[in-house]
Length: 591
Image 1 (spheres, rainbow, N blue to C red):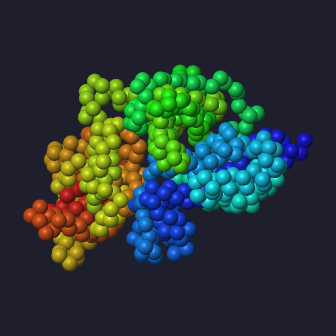
Image 2 (cartoon, helix red, strand yellow):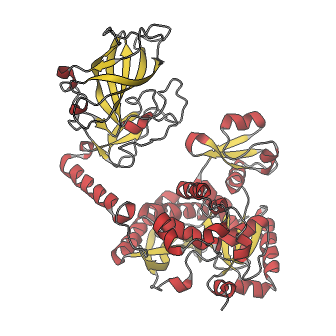
Image 3 (cartoon, helix red, strand yellow):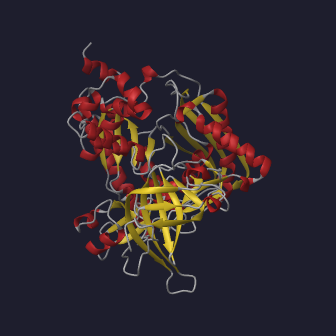
């Protein structure tokens, strides 16, 4: 059997229906505006543009732009923030229109539908006829323009929809081969891990899907893990979950009757959360993960008593498959908003109260089909650490364990926010806002809870002074930290506050990246009684905060590299020093 024939028999013939720029389209529908209005949706770090309408694109607005730049290019631009619930709710009429052509569709994400094309194409005459019928029905019933593509496998079908093309059976691998590896992001938009992996491949010389498909399977699994295996399977034109690689397990279903029926989304969502937790517990107890989630609701007309069934299927495959209870609840809530909103049910129809809910986990497979790693997230350290922290909180209280969050500020200490572990506390200062005068990278690895008095001397032993014009009285030659002050009032170092001083708003190289419980350790030996020669230095950088108030602070920062603290085998040590009113203090240390 040839390679092309083997590939064709291992995949499912799939039709993909794609509505371009769906987040913008949904926002325009909610606002009651037409498609001719230039519009964009913002989201992510810094509030950058994530979706653009065709009129805005013709005016020069592009994804990734900042809000101000986009408005400069198109003064009439309408802007909305990203809203997943809005996108899912307003996409329901499109799904209903597609179901008039073929049943059994899957919602990959709002704006993208997957349909089994085999039987439907035979019924309508051909795959081209199926694509034309889907396009016409969506346009007639919703007024939205869409594109339909048909191909073997998930990624090929998604790209074919973007090209509005039908790829002949068995040709998907050749269709994908010349395309850049960056097109993989269309399979999972806004996935930062996938974007970083594609960038890594580019730097390694893996530039096209053909290059990725040609790599040895074992090498990809060992070097790039589950995400790499998933991407390579798509690059070869295969399904994410081929039937030959799947052990069939009976689907799991949980059901609950609502008495009285729920007229409001919040009431129905409360019941849906209980169902989501039950379904998640069943999957977890049996060691299973699901590839698709089927949401079924029984609605009863309050006047006639007539019952009808509302059903929708959601694709849930991530790298390891499965969903948490919270994510299941989110999907159910989005769907309920679509069903209980009159605008989502079509012209002339009124929403009926929900009398029953059912959740079914389909395409159930053993969880963690790949062998766990010896270290890293796949080995379970994160889960064990979380459980240990939760036990400590149960014994000592929620405020007994703190974790580090990034917030806005100009020096490392100001950019650290300590919050109780597990709580979603908003930052006191927005880290995405501009902070002129912020300390430039690299970030310190250890930030002292309180500054420690220090002395900075020049080659003649005189104190180094920084005047109002930022001129230093002499080059720093030695740094002295008196021993009685270094260990006395500092209480140790807040290791993990380190990453908060990155100039880009990220947490580079921090000891506290992730959900690591922070605390104070007696690490004062690294600088107690320090008296070392300066090897190199940079600065000073002035920081004047709230200078117009009585509580204003004016400081200058200096980065220095000194010899080790006099112990054999010690390497050089990086220090962050600050000076205020002629007095020097030690603020932080660098690795």
